[in-house]
Each structure stands twice: as C-alpha cells, then as structure tokens.
Length: 244
Image (cartoon, rainbow, N blue to C red; front, side):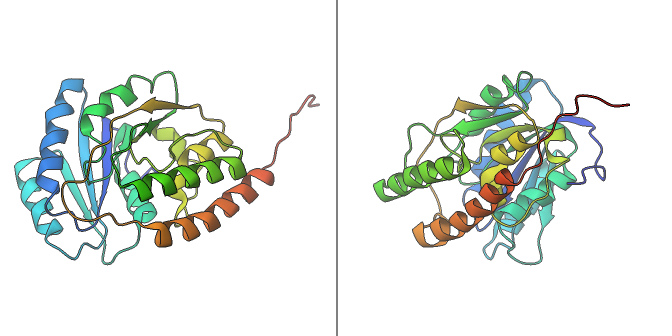
C-alpha cells in the first residue's frame, strides 16, 4: 500500500469502518474519547462510511463538528470492509494504526492493552476468548478459525477480531484485495513482521444487526483462504551466502 500520501504526523490513528450503525455511533465516539486521551499520545479517529443507507453519515458529520480529531471518509457506495480499511489506512497519519469495528462488541478500553505490546511486536491482534454471541455464531467462528489456521499453517486463534494494532510500516508491502482484511496477520508474517495476540473483552451487540452470517461469510472467506494459502506456498524464499 502507498501510505506516502499521508505522512506520519501523529502517534495513533484509529480506523473504524461504518455501515448502518447510526444508533451505535454516538456511544462509540464517546467511548473512544473516554479512553484515547489517557494514552497521552496524539491521535485521530477515522470513520469510513461504507455506503451506509441509514442516518450514519448525518450522525458522523454532527460528531465531527464537535471533535476536530474526528475525520470522516465517505464512499459513493458500499464497497466492503477491506476497502473501508484500505481507505482509512491511506488517510491515516499515525505511526500506529488501530482497527476497530463500530458495533462496540470490542471496546475501546482494550486499545491500551494492545499498544503495550506494539513496541515489542509489529502487529498485535485481539483475541475474543470469551465470546458474547449466539451459539451458532460462536460455533461457526470456531470452525472457521480452525480451518483457516490449518490450511494456512497459522496459529492466530481469532483472525475475525477487528481490534488490532499495527505499526504503520506493516502496510507498505501489502497489496489488499476484497476479503483479505481477515488475513492481515498472515500477510504481515509473510513479510517478516512480528505478530502476537492479546486477550480482549467481547460484549453483546446493543444496536443494529450483524452484517455477517454463515452464508455470506464461510464461502467467500474460504475462497480467500485458498488464495492466501497459494500465496504462502508460492512465496519466494532465498538466502544469499556470497556476493562478488
């Protein structure tokens, strides 16, 4: 990815894809502003409106008037979560980029826990060890993670958790395609970056509906998994032992 368009001038950028979350947004913004100032670091919040059809945009624009640290990017149409993340990364000015879903099932209070590890590691992934989801979603997610890890020779217990922290440079060698946000840790390991996992909280969804179900998640993510598996198998690996 080309991040040169937005030079690193801040410590932290929090990137949040938004799709039909008008009820959650005020509370999400409040919680971010409750927990980010305590880090004593410069920061920005980037909301990426992925073609919302409800009142999300109006809510975000209202919040932006109150908070100069909030930025809003608006898509012309729904493009998907990977595209929303990519646009946020391109716009981000932070040396560290934190990703977060808008539904508050992951809570901003866990962001400091991830940042504690970012000096030692390049990527810190949240792990929703105790899920607060319907049983069918918990079971399907567990199966998906097991299959994903086995086929990609990976050990990340919860790749579906959007709460992650990345050093900015992790995105420089990465070319993103639709659906590949699920494989950020694997893609970055392939480039030699250090990845670790931190347990984070998980909370019931208060507003709205989940954008994912077994039908739209399992089959598309499996195709993406096969692509990542191919990339890992075909990755160039060599060591120069002499140069004249």
